[in-house]
Image (cartoon, rainbow, N blue to C red):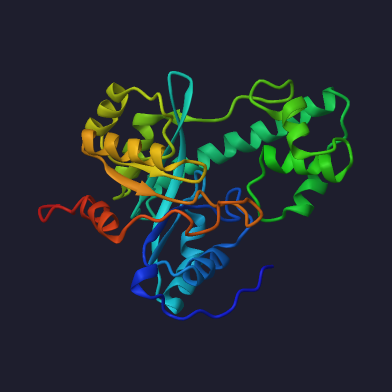
Length: 290
């Protein structure tokens, strides 16, 4: 486990929010508490835990956020689709105890577990040795996925690198891969809204049609990521222009998974606090007649 030093309260010049961070509750390597401590060390005012198709890490992280005085934004990254194209929908300020949302995430996880076992079968059919129990022992807390299988193949010396594992066996068009469980994007937006949250589109492709984005906005989309690792200043500027054109709140985040990923450290891309407040203002208010 990574041991992090105690931190002091961040200075205003260092403030901001990282609104896209993963933990061991999906495919990250830092525990929820480690994420919060790292975010505080980075001088962030707020951090959102947005694990894939689960909100289980949020309540685990909350005591550490309270101790350090950093805002923890309850979040999720839902795996969705539009005409067989994968989309990722971020949700913020969710009620993490909302049972319909939890039911949807449990369904996705059950389907993902079935997919993982099917990929193992595919690897075995190709002559590779893969043992589920041994993989689980190496990663006892993780939501297992292709990344873990690739690392297992490297550990067991059946391939030289993770990249080779994906290229030969695990990439979307590779022989051992199986389709990923996804929900229609409109269902993902509705699940977030029904849990009292606001939604954003994660890392949209450059060629995404504005007509689709307008349709998503009409269905409840409030924001769009405009800055994440790997983009230059020109791409970020274009993303902000598109957000302004469509009336969507521009967000930034690190999409953090592991500290060994260069240029993806927690806080490397920050949403200004003014935009975080604009996002917060979109949170549905309960009706006084309810």
